[in-house]
Image (cartoon, rainbow, N blue to C red; front, side, top):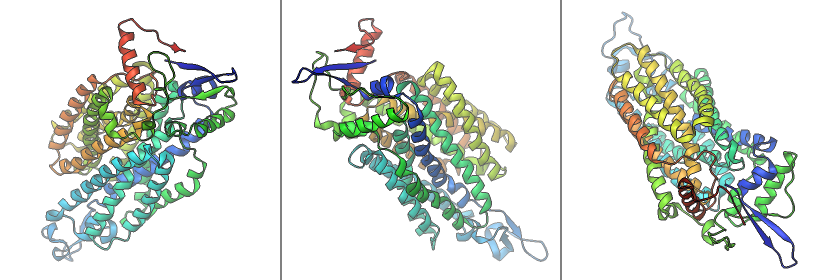
Length: 517
Protein backbone atom coordinates (compact mmCIF):
# COMPACT_ATOMS: atom_id res chain seq x y z
CA UNK A 1 0.00 0.00 0.00
CA UNK A 2 1.54 3.31 -1.14
CA UNK A 3 0.68 6.73 0.29
CA UNK A 4 1.73 10.03 -1.25
CA UNK A 5 0.52 13.50 -0.28
CA UNK A 6 0.90 16.55 -2.52
CA UNK A 7 1.26 19.83 -0.62
CA UNK A 8 1.32 23.33 -2.16
CA UNK A 9 3.54 25.92 -0.47
CA UNK A 10 2.93 29.63 -0.20
CA UNK A 11 4.84 30.32 -3.44
CA UNK A 12 2.79 27.80 -5.39
CA UNK A 13 5.56 25.15 -5.39
CA UNK A 14 4.39 21.61 -4.78
CA UNK A 15 6.19 19.13 -2.52
CA UNK A 16 5.55 15.46 -2.29
CA UNK A 17 5.23 14.04 1.24
CA UNK A 18 6.14 10.35 1.30
CA UNK A 19 6.65 7.67 3.92
CA UNK A 20 10.09 6.14 4.33
CA UNK A 21 8.90 2.86 2.79
CA UNK A 22 7.83 4.76 -0.34
CA UNK A 23 11.16 6.62 -0.55
CA UNK A 24 13.06 3.34 -0.19
CA UNK A 25 10.97 1.63 -2.85
CA UNK A 26 10.87 4.49 -5.38
CA UNK A 27 14.06 6.48 -4.97
CA UNK A 28 16.90 4.96 -2.91
CA UNK A 29 16.68 1.27 -3.75
CA UNK A 30 15.33 -1.23 -1.26
CA UNK A 31 18.54 -3.22 -0.78
CA UNK A 32 21.62 -1.81 -2.46
CA UNK A 33 25.29 -1.42 -1.60
CA UNK A 34 24.58 0.94 1.31
CA UNK A 35 22.09 -1.40 2.95
CA UNK A 36 24.33 -4.44 2.42
CA UNK A 37 27.34 -2.82 4.08
CA UNK A 38 25.25 -1.41 6.93
CA UNK A 39 23.45 -4.73 7.40
CA UNK A 40 26.66 -6.76 7.70
CA UNK A 41 28.36 -4.33 10.08
CA UNK A 42 25.38 -4.04 12.42
CA UNK A 43 24.52 -7.76 12.35
CA UNK A 44 27.99 -8.65 13.64
CA UNK A 45 26.56 -7.75 17.06
CA UNK A 46 24.54 -10.98 16.93
CA UNK A 47 27.75 -13.02 17.13
CA UNK A 48 28.63 -11.16 20.32
CA UNK A 49 25.25 -11.89 21.90
CA UNK A 50 25.60 -15.57 21.03
CA UNK A 51 28.99 -15.83 22.73
CA UNK A 52 27.96 -13.95 25.88
CA UNK A 53 24.81 -16.07 26.21
CA UNK A 54 26.00 -19.56 25.31
CA UNK A 55 29.34 -19.35 27.11
CA UNK A 56 27.60 -20.82 30.15
CA UNK A 57 27.46 -24.20 28.42
CA UNK A 58 31.27 -24.44 28.51
CA UNK A 59 32.25 -22.26 31.47
CA UNK A 60 29.81 -23.98 33.84
CA UNK A 61 30.16 -27.55 32.52
CA UNK A 62 31.11 -30.50 34.72
CA UNK A 63 34.44 -31.74 33.29
CA UNK A 64 35.65 -35.32 33.26
CA UNK A 65 37.18 -36.65 36.45
CA UNK A 66 39.93 -39.26 36.70
CA UNK A 67 40.87 -41.59 39.52
CA UNK A 68 44.28 -40.55 40.83
CA UNK A 69 44.58 -43.20 43.56
CA UNK A 70 47.72 -45.33 43.31
CA UNK A 71 45.78 -48.55 43.52
CA UNK A 72 43.35 -47.29 40.88
CA UNK A 73 40.43 -47.57 43.28
CA UNK A 74 38.35 -44.53 44.09
CA UNK A 75 35.13 -44.32 46.06
CA UNK A 76 32.12 -42.03 45.56
CA UNK A 77 32.87 -39.23 43.07
CA UNK A 78 30.95 -36.77 45.23
CA UNK A 79 33.72 -37.09 47.82
CA UNK A 80 36.10 -35.47 45.33
CA UNK A 81 39.82 -35.32 46.06
CA UNK A 82 39.33 -37.02 49.43
CA UNK A 83 38.23 -40.13 47.56
CA UNK A 84 41.07 -39.94 45.03
CA UNK A 85 39.26 -38.13 42.22
CA UNK A 86 40.88 -35.32 40.24
CA UNK A 87 39.65 -33.12 37.41
CA UNK A 88 41.32 -34.30 34.20
CA UNK A 89 41.83 -30.73 32.91
CA UNK A 90 42.52 -29.17 36.30
CA UNK A 91 40.28 -27.37 38.78
CA UNK A 92 40.36 -24.18 36.71
CA UNK A 93 38.72 -25.79 33.68
CA UNK A 94 35.20 -24.72 34.72
CA UNK A 95 33.30 -23.00 37.50
CA UNK A 96 31.85 -26.37 38.50
CA UNK A 97 35.33 -27.78 38.99
CA UNK A 98 36.82 -24.75 40.74
CA UNK A 99 33.97 -24.23 43.21
CA UNK A 100 32.72 -27.81 43.56
CA UNK A 101 29.35 -27.30 41.89
CA UNK A 102 28.59 -31.00 41.65
CA UNK A 103 26.36 -33.52 43.36
CA UNK A 104 24.47 -31.64 46.10
CA UNK A 105 25.81 -28.30 44.86
CA UNK A 106 24.86 -28.88 41.22
CA UNK A 107 21.74 -26.73 41.59
CA UNK A 108 24.02 -23.67 41.70
CA UNK A 109 24.87 -24.19 38.03
CA UNK A 110 21.19 -24.07 37.09
CA UNK A 111 20.75 -21.12 39.46
CA UNK A 112 23.47 -18.96 37.89
CA UNK A 113 22.17 -19.77 34.42
CA UNK A 114 18.63 -18.87 35.44
CA UNK A 115 19.56 -15.57 37.09
CA UNK A 116 21.57 -14.62 33.98
CA UNK A 117 18.26 -14.66 32.14
CA UNK A 118 16.66 -12.66 34.96
CA UNK A 119 19.16 -9.95 34.14
CA UNK A 120 18.29 -10.38 30.46
CA UNK A 121 14.60 -9.92 31.22
CA UNK A 122 15.16 -6.66 33.12
CA UNK A 123 17.61 -5.28 30.59
CA UNK A 124 15.32 -6.03 27.63
CA UNK A 125 12.60 -3.80 29.05
CA UNK A 126 14.98 -0.98 29.94
CA UNK A 127 16.88 -0.86 26.67
CA UNK A 128 13.77 -1.51 24.61
CA UNK A 129 12.45 1.82 25.89
CA UNK A 130 15.79 3.62 25.63
CA UNK A 131 16.22 2.48 22.02
CA UNK A 132 12.82 3.93 21.08
CA UNK A 133 13.39 7.12 23.08
CA UNK A 134 16.39 9.44 23.46
CA UNK A 135 19.24 6.90 23.22
CA UNK A 136 18.26 5.56 19.82
CA UNK A 137 19.11 2.28 18.13
CA UNK A 138 22.79 3.05 17.54
CA UNK A 139 23.38 4.66 20.93
CA UNK A 140 21.81 1.70 22.73
CA UNK A 141 23.93 -0.78 20.79
CA UNK A 142 27.15 1.07 21.63
CA UNK A 143 26.31 1.18 25.36
CA UNK A 144 25.28 -2.49 25.43
CA UNK A 145 28.39 -3.83 23.71
CA UNK A 146 30.69 -1.71 25.87
CA UNK A 147 28.98 -2.99 29.03
CA UNK A 148 29.28 -6.58 27.79
CA UNK A 149 33.01 -6.18 27.24
CA UNK A 150 33.66 -4.67 30.68
CA UNK A 151 31.41 -7.08 32.57
CA UNK A 152 32.82 -10.11 30.75
CA UNK A 153 36.37 -9.14 31.68
CA UNK A 154 35.33 -8.58 35.30
CA UNK A 155 33.62 -12.00 35.34
CA UNK A 156 36.97 -13.59 34.48
CA UNK A 157 38.32 -12.18 37.76
CA UNK A 158 35.51 -13.53 39.98
CA UNK A 159 36.97 -14.63 43.34
CA UNK A 160 34.04 -16.86 44.29
CA UNK A 161 30.71 -18.23 43.10
CA UNK A 162 28.49 -15.44 44.44
CA UNK A 163 30.53 -12.64 42.82
CA UNK A 164 30.44 -14.68 39.62
CA UNK A 165 26.65 -15.00 39.88
CA UNK A 166 26.23 -11.26 40.47
CA UNK A 167 28.36 -10.40 37.44
CA UNK A 168 26.41 -12.86 35.28
CA UNK A 169 23.17 -11.08 36.24
CA UNK A 170 24.69 -7.76 35.18
CA UNK A 171 25.98 -9.29 31.95
CA UNK A 172 22.50 -10.59 31.24
CA UNK A 173 21.15 -7.08 31.75
CA UNK A 174 23.27 -5.82 28.86
CA UNK A 175 23.32 -8.94 26.67
CA UNK A 176 19.65 -9.56 25.90
CA UNK A 177 19.08 -6.25 24.12
CA UNK A 178 22.07 -6.52 21.78
CA UNK A 179 20.25 -8.78 19.35
CA UNK A 180 17.00 -6.90 18.93
CA UNK A 181 18.67 -3.47 18.86
CA UNK A 182 20.98 -4.81 16.16
CA UNK A 183 18.05 -6.35 14.28
CA UNK A 184 16.00 -3.13 14.26
CA UNK A 185 18.98 -0.97 13.28
CA UNK A 186 19.95 -3.40 10.50
CA UNK A 187 16.50 -3.83 8.94
CA UNK A 188 14.77 -0.45 9.28
CA UNK A 189 16.66 1.11 6.34
CA UNK A 190 15.71 -1.85 4.08
CA UNK A 191 12.72 -1.76 1.74
CA UNK A 192 9.57 -3.88 2.22
CA UNK A 193 10.27 -6.54 -0.42
CA UNK A 194 13.70 -7.44 1.04
CA UNK A 195 13.07 -6.85 4.75
CA UNK A 196 11.92 -10.38 5.60
CA UNK A 197 14.86 -12.08 3.90
CA UNK A 198 17.32 -9.66 5.47
CA UNK A 199 15.76 -10.10 8.90
CA UNK A 200 16.12 -13.88 8.74
CA UNK A 201 19.69 -13.52 7.50
CA UNK A 202 20.68 -11.75 10.73
CA UNK A 203 20.39 -15.14 12.39
CA UNK A 204 23.32 -16.51 10.40
CA UNK A 205 25.43 -14.24 12.56
CA UNK A 206 23.94 -15.66 15.78
CA UNK A 207 24.57 -19.24 14.66
CA UNK A 208 28.03 -18.22 13.51
CA UNK A 209 28.65 -16.78 16.95
CA UNK A 210 27.82 -20.12 18.58
CA UNK A 211 30.12 -21.93 16.14
CA UNK A 212 32.89 -19.43 16.90
CA UNK A 213 32.31 -19.95 20.62
CA UNK A 214 32.82 -23.71 20.19
CA UNK A 215 36.15 -23.04 18.47
CA UNK A 216 37.28 -20.63 21.20
CA UNK A 217 36.08 -22.95 23.97
CA UNK A 218 38.06 -25.81 22.44
CA UNK A 219 41.22 -23.70 22.71
CA UNK A 220 40.56 -22.75 26.34
CA UNK A 221 39.24 -26.02 27.80
CA UNK A 222 41.56 -25.78 30.77
CA UNK A 223 40.62 -22.23 31.84
CA UNK A 224 37.11 -20.84 32.05
CA UNK A 225 38.59 -17.46 33.03
CA UNK A 226 40.58 -17.14 29.79
CA UNK A 227 37.44 -18.21 27.92
CA UNK A 228 35.60 -15.19 29.33
CA UNK A 229 38.47 -12.89 28.33
CA UNK A 230 38.57 -14.29 24.80
CA UNK A 231 34.81 -13.84 24.30
CA UNK A 232 34.67 -10.33 25.82
CA UNK A 233 37.37 -8.55 23.85
CA UNK A 234 35.44 -8.82 20.53
CA UNK A 235 32.67 -6.66 22.01
CA UNK A 236 35.18 -3.91 22.76
CA UNK A 237 36.62 -4.21 19.25
CA UNK A 238 33.10 -3.92 17.81
CA UNK A 239 32.47 -0.63 19.64
CA UNK A 240 35.80 0.89 18.62
CA UNK A 241 36.22 -0.42 15.08
CA UNK A 242 32.70 -1.03 13.70
CA UNK A 243 30.16 1.32 15.28
CA UNK A 244 31.83 4.55 14.00
CA UNK A 245 30.88 3.42 10.48
CA UNK A 246 27.22 2.70 11.32
CA UNK A 247 24.35 5.18 10.77
CA UNK A 248 21.35 5.76 13.03
CA UNK A 249 17.98 4.55 11.73
CA UNK A 250 16.17 7.14 9.58
CA UNK A 251 12.87 5.87 10.99
CA UNK A 252 13.99 6.70 14.52
CA UNK A 253 15.03 10.17 13.39
CA UNK A 254 11.62 10.72 11.80
CA UNK A 255 9.49 9.68 14.77
CA UNK A 256 11.71 11.84 17.00
CA UNK A 257 10.85 14.86 14.87
CA UNK A 258 14.27 15.02 13.18
CA UNK A 259 13.08 14.83 9.58
CA UNK A 260 16.20 16.59 8.24
CA UNK A 261 18.46 13.94 9.76
CA UNK A 262 16.22 11.19 8.41
CA UNK A 263 16.39 12.68 4.91
CA UNK A 264 20.16 13.08 5.22
CA UNK A 265 20.53 9.33 5.84
CA UNK A 266 18.15 8.49 2.99
CA UNK A 267 20.05 10.73 0.57
CA UNK A 268 23.27 9.00 1.62
CA UNK A 269 21.62 5.65 0.90
CA UNK A 270 20.47 6.84 -2.51
CA UNK A 271 23.89 8.28 -3.40
CA UNK A 272 25.76 5.09 -2.44
CA UNK A 273 23.25 2.99 -4.39
CA UNK A 274 23.64 5.18 -7.47
CA UNK A 275 20.17 6.68 -7.11
CA UNK A 276 18.75 10.12 -6.33
CA UNK A 277 15.86 11.46 -4.25
CA UNK A 278 14.05 14.35 -6.00
CA UNK A 279 14.40 17.72 -4.29
CA UNK A 280 10.61 18.12 -3.90
CA UNK A 281 10.27 14.98 -1.73
CA UNK A 282 9.69 15.45 2.00
CA UNK A 283 9.03 12.83 4.66
CA UNK A 284 5.86 12.13 6.62
CA UNK A 285 4.72 9.60 9.16
CA UNK A 286 2.11 7.09 8.05
CA UNK A 287 -0.29 8.47 10.67
CA UNK A 288 -0.14 12.01 9.27
CA UNK A 289 -3.00 11.55 6.86
CA UNK A 290 -6.51 10.86 8.11
CA UNK A 291 -9.45 9.19 6.39
CA UNK A 292 -10.66 12.54 4.99
CA UNK A 293 -7.36 12.91 3.10
CA UNK A 294 -6.40 16.08 4.98
CA UNK A 295 -2.87 16.50 6.32
CA UNK A 296 -2.58 16.19 10.06
CA UNK A 297 -0.02 17.84 12.31
CA UNK A 298 2.43 15.41 13.86
CA UNK A 299 1.66 14.66 17.47
CA UNK A 300 4.47 15.03 19.95
CA UNK A 301 3.42 11.70 21.42
CA UNK A 302 5.13 9.89 18.57
CA UNK A 303 8.49 10.74 20.09
CA UNK A 304 7.57 9.60 23.56
CA UNK A 305 5.60 6.43 23.00
CA UNK A 306 6.08 3.56 25.45
CA UNK A 307 4.88 0.00 25.77
CA UNK A 308 1.78 1.39 27.53
CA UNK A 309 0.76 3.07 24.28
CA UNK A 310 0.76 -0.33 22.61
CA UNK A 311 -1.73 -1.54 25.23
CA UNK A 312 -4.01 1.45 24.53
CA UNK A 313 -4.31 0.44 20.87
CA UNK A 314 -6.76 -2.44 20.44
CA UNK A 315 -4.93 -3.88 17.43
CA UNK A 316 -1.52 -3.58 19.05
CA UNK A 317 -2.79 -4.92 22.39
CA UNK A 318 -4.09 -8.20 20.94
CA UNK A 319 -0.93 -8.68 18.90
CA UNK A 320 1.28 -7.93 21.90
CA UNK A 321 -0.36 -10.46 24.23
CA UNK A 322 -0.16 -13.23 21.64
CA UNK A 323 3.43 -12.31 20.73
CA UNK A 324 4.51 -12.40 24.37
CA UNK A 325 3.06 -15.88 24.92
CA UNK A 326 4.45 -17.32 21.68
CA UNK A 327 7.92 -15.85 22.30
CA UNK A 328 7.90 -17.25 25.85
CA UNK A 329 7.11 -20.74 24.60
CA UNK A 330 9.68 -20.52 21.82
CA UNK A 331 12.38 -19.54 24.29
CA UNK A 332 11.61 -22.36 26.72
CA UNK A 333 12.09 -24.90 23.93
CA UNK A 334 15.01 -23.24 22.13
CA UNK A 335 17.20 -22.60 25.18
CA UNK A 336 16.03 -25.82 26.80
CA UNK A 337 17.20 -27.89 23.84
CA UNK A 338 20.46 -25.91 23.66
CA UNK A 339 21.24 -26.54 27.34
CA UNK A 340 19.88 -30.11 27.28
CA UNK A 341 23.02 -31.34 25.49
CA UNK A 342 24.44 -32.13 28.95
CA UNK A 343 21.82 -34.89 29.28
CA UNK A 344 22.52 -36.56 25.92
CA UNK A 345 25.65 -38.52 26.96
CA UNK A 346 27.47 -37.34 23.83
CA UNK A 347 30.52 -35.13 23.28
CA UNK A 348 29.59 -31.63 24.49
CA UNK A 349 31.55 -29.76 21.84
CA UNK A 350 30.22 -31.87 18.97
CA UNK A 351 26.63 -31.53 20.21
CA UNK A 352 26.79 -27.73 20.54
CA UNK A 353 28.51 -27.41 17.16
CA UNK A 354 25.84 -29.63 15.55
CA UNK A 355 23.07 -27.49 17.04
CA UNK A 356 24.76 -24.31 15.77
CA UNK A 357 25.42 -25.65 12.29
CA UNK A 358 21.89 -26.99 11.84
CA UNK A 359 20.54 -23.48 12.47
CA UNK A 360 22.29 -22.18 9.35
CA UNK A 361 20.34 -24.33 6.86
CA UNK A 362 17.29 -23.56 8.99
CA UNK A 363 17.79 -19.88 8.11
CA UNK A 364 18.15 -20.76 4.41
CA UNK A 365 15.03 -22.93 4.40
CA UNK A 366 13.11 -20.20 6.23
CA UNK A 367 14.16 -17.61 3.65
CA UNK A 368 12.93 -19.81 0.81
CA UNK A 369 9.66 -20.64 2.55
CA UNK A 370 8.97 -16.99 3.38
CA UNK A 371 8.90 -16.07 -0.29
CA UNK A 372 6.04 -18.49 -0.95
CA UNK A 373 4.11 -18.95 2.27
CA UNK A 374 4.64 -15.82 4.38
CA UNK A 375 5.50 -15.44 8.05
CA UNK A 376 2.50 -16.96 9.80
CA UNK A 377 2.41 -20.45 8.16
CA UNK A 378 6.17 -20.89 8.54
CA UNK A 379 6.13 -20.00 12.26
CA UNK A 380 3.25 -22.39 12.86
CA UNK A 381 4.88 -25.20 10.88
CA UNK A 382 8.31 -24.95 12.47
CA UNK A 383 6.92 -24.83 16.02
CA UNK A 384 4.82 -27.92 15.36
CA UNK A 385 7.81 -29.70 13.78
CA UNK A 386 9.94 -28.99 16.83
CA UNK A 387 7.18 -30.02 19.21
CA UNK A 388 6.58 -33.36 17.50
CA UNK A 389 10.32 -34.07 17.33
CA UNK A 390 10.68 -33.43 21.07
CA UNK A 391 7.71 -35.68 21.81
CA UNK A 392 9.49 -38.42 19.86
CA UNK A 393 12.68 -37.79 21.85
CA UNK A 394 10.79 -38.18 25.13
CA UNK A 395 9.66 -41.67 24.08
CA UNK A 396 13.21 -42.91 23.40
CA UNK A 397 15.04 -44.68 26.22
CA UNK A 398 18.84 -44.89 26.17
CA UNK A 399 20.30 -44.45 22.68
CA UNK A 400 21.85 -41.04 23.19
CA UNK A 401 22.52 -40.71 19.44
CA UNK A 402 18.81 -41.08 18.61
CA UNK A 403 17.80 -38.55 21.23
CA UNK A 404 20.49 -36.21 19.95
CA UNK A 405 18.97 -36.56 16.45
CA UNK A 406 15.54 -35.67 17.86
CA UNK A 407 17.12 -32.71 19.62
CA UNK A 408 18.82 -31.56 16.41
CA UNK A 409 15.50 -31.67 14.52
CA UNK A 410 13.89 -29.84 17.43
CA UNK A 411 16.61 -27.17 17.33
CA UNK A 412 16.19 -26.94 13.54
CA UNK A 413 12.47 -26.24 13.94
CA UNK A 414 12.59 -24.00 16.99
CA UNK A 415 15.76 -22.25 15.82
CA UNK A 416 13.86 -21.35 12.66
CA UNK A 417 10.97 -20.10 14.77
CA UNK A 418 13.28 -18.16 17.09
CA UNK A 419 14.87 -16.45 14.10
CA UNK A 420 11.60 -15.69 12.34
CA UNK A 421 9.82 -14.40 15.44
CA UNK A 422 12.14 -11.40 15.59
CA UNK A 423 11.19 -10.52 12.01
CA UNK A 424 7.51 -11.30 12.52
CA UNK A 425 7.23 -9.37 15.78
CA UNK A 426 9.03 -6.32 14.36
CA UNK A 427 6.64 -6.23 11.41
CA UNK A 428 3.56 -6.50 13.62
CA UNK A 429 4.23 -3.16 15.37
CA UNK A 430 5.00 0.46 14.31
CA UNK A 431 8.29 2.32 14.66
CA UNK A 432 7.24 4.37 17.71
CA UNK A 433 6.97 1.25 19.87
CA UNK A 434 8.89 -1.33 17.82
CA UNK A 435 11.94 -1.83 20.02
CA UNK A 436 9.85 -1.33 23.18
CA UNK A 437 7.64 -4.22 22.02
CA UNK A 438 10.68 -6.26 21.01
CA UNK A 439 12.04 -5.53 24.47
CA UNK A 440 8.79 -6.76 26.00
CA UNK A 441 8.77 -9.95 23.94
CA UNK A 442 12.48 -10.35 24.72
CA UNK A 443 11.53 -10.21 28.40
CA UNK A 444 9.07 -13.01 27.74
CA UNK A 445 11.86 -14.92 26.03
CA UNK A 446 14.11 -14.39 29.03
CA UNK A 447 11.40 -15.71 31.33
CA UNK A 448 11.32 -18.81 29.15
CA UNK A 449 15.11 -18.97 29.26
CA UNK A 450 15.00 -18.71 33.08
CA UNK A 451 12.72 -21.72 33.15
CA UNK A 452 14.75 -23.74 30.62
CA UNK A 453 17.76 -24.71 32.83
CA UNK A 454 15.39 -25.63 35.65
CA UNK A 455 13.62 -28.03 33.28
CA UNK A 456 16.90 -29.49 32.02
CA UNK A 457 17.89 -30.69 35.51
CA UNK A 458 14.74 -32.86 35.66
CA UNK A 459 16.51 -35.67 33.80
CA UNK A 460 16.83 -36.96 30.27
CA UNK A 461 13.25 -37.71 29.13
CA UNK A 462 11.02 -35.27 31.03
CA UNK A 463 12.56 -32.15 29.40
CA UNK A 464 11.87 -33.52 25.92
CA UNK A 465 8.24 -34.16 26.81
CA UNK A 466 7.70 -30.66 28.22
CA UNK A 467 9.44 -29.04 25.25
CA UNK A 468 7.28 -31.06 22.86
CA UNK A 469 3.97 -30.06 24.41
CA UNK A 470 5.10 -26.41 24.58
CA UNK A 471 6.04 -26.36 20.90
CA UNK A 472 2.67 -27.72 19.82
CA UNK A 473 0.72 -25.21 21.94
CA UNK A 474 2.82 -22.33 20.59
CA UNK A 475 2.20 -23.38 17.00
CA UNK A 476 -1.55 -23.38 17.54
CA UNK A 477 -1.52 -19.90 19.14
CA UNK A 478 0.17 -18.34 16.10
CA UNK A 479 -3.00 -19.08 14.14
CA UNK A 480 -4.62 -15.98 15.73
CA UNK A 481 -1.94 -13.54 14.49
CA UNK A 482 -2.18 -11.77 11.09
CA UNK A 483 0.12 -12.23 8.11
CA UNK A 484 2.64 -9.39 7.55
CA UNK A 485 4.31 -10.37 4.28
CA UNK A 486 4.46 -7.41 1.85
CA UNK A 487 2.61 -5.20 4.35
CA UNK A 488 3.88 -1.66 5.19
CA UNK A 489 6.25 -1.18 8.11
CA UNK A 490 4.10 1.31 9.99
CA UNK A 491 5.57 4.33 11.78
CA UNK A 492 2.74 5.22 14.20
CA UNK A 493 -0.02 3.45 16.11
CA UNK A 494 -2.54 5.55 14.19
CA UNK A 495 -1.07 4.24 10.95
CA UNK A 496 -1.30 0.67 12.27
CA UNK A 497 -4.97 1.10 13.20
CA UNK A 498 -5.76 2.61 9.79
CA UNK A 499 -3.89 -0.19 8.08
CA UNK A 500 -5.86 -2.77 10.04
CA UNK A 501 -9.14 -1.12 9.08
CA UNK A 502 -8.07 -0.88 5.44
CA UNK A 503 -7.06 -4.54 5.47
CA UNK A 504 -10.43 -5.54 6.87
CA UNK A 505 -12.22 -3.38 4.29
CA UNK A 506 -10.16 -4.83 1.46
CA UNK A 507 -11.08 -8.33 2.56
CA UNK A 508 -14.71 -7.31 2.15
CA UNK A 509 -13.96 -6.00 -1.34
CA UNK A 510 -14.78 -2.39 -0.49
CA UNK A 511 -11.39 -0.63 -0.66
CA UNK A 512 -8.62 0.02 -3.15
CA UNK A 513 -5.06 -1.13 -2.66
CA UNK A 514 -3.47 2.32 -3.02
CA UNK A 515 -4.32 5.75 -1.65
CA UNK A 516 -3.08 8.95 -3.33
CA UNK A 517 -3.99 12.47 -2.27
